[in-house]
Image 1: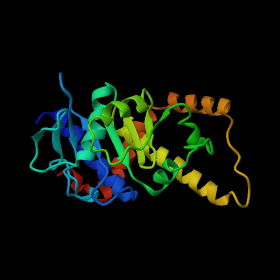
Image 2 (image 1 turned 180 degrees about the horizontal axis):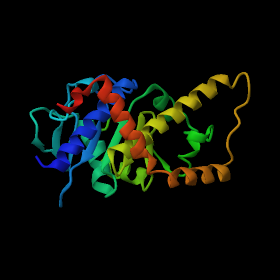
Image 3 (image 1 turned 90 degrees about the horizontal axis):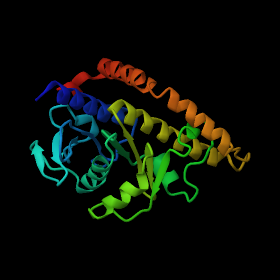
Image 4 (image 1 turned 135 degrees about the vertical axis):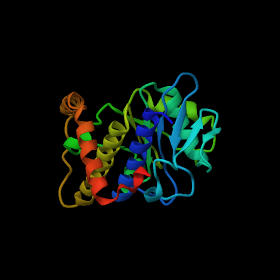
Length: 243
């Protein structure tokens, strides 16, 4: 195993452990992946089916190719996870990491016809940077991959309607922070909706939201700084993800 793959394994395992800390688990379901370097058909790391997020380590991640063949590892994967992640990895050269979640807030907003609203500064980061994909059932049908690709387009995140959230990034740090704030934006919207009986929700105008989104894009490099801080926190709490 080369140094680059080992680094990606460490980062992806850390992402699973942090997600467990943040309460993003859905028992054995949902999945994060990272594409391995190399020419030709994409190969990516993903979680072995049967392990909770807090059981994931760098060494027990499995390697799957674009046809669904297990290249490395002694466990199976979630077929729906393969459909979603292989779709994104094969369509976007910059989509090195893909994170998919079923959080309460994310699923609640995914169930709303209006989608994500410009409720808050955090929500504004995703203005015109967020795609929507219509629900087609559990993602077992490989033919859905082309439609997932079209729905995502060049956006940094996707709301899978009546399902959950998805983020992409050039690094694990990018994809993880995008998901962190997309989920937080959904939490804020859910909380604001609960207050709507007391006071009307004031939305940020589209023109201002577009400006704010541009401001966030200019400091996207700070995602790595935040990631490094999260890794230090994880190392203090439980560094066993490195095993």
